[in-house]
Image 1 (tube, rainbow, N blue to C red):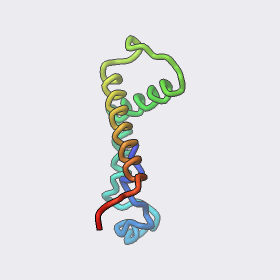
Image 2: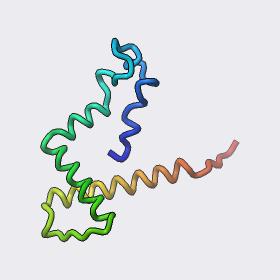
Image 3: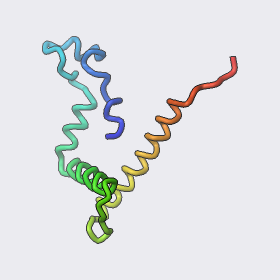
Length: 101
């Protein structure tokens, strides 16, 4: 979900969407639409709840382990790991590349 913007280049860049009868709509195989559909499932709802918990923690709310389920704890841990990977990737992209010529 941190890389949502990388799932689909957008209708203006997507040749499948451009060839659609209804311009501006995502293509039939759009991964962003797949993500949105998944987030409406019971497990997807748990991911959304973990994002809400993550927001609360980052905003300074206190939550103890007694307040969350083991699944929510695991999802928060996975979200934290993914956030660290995402931030590392962003730093590497922003770093000037010096290579031999």
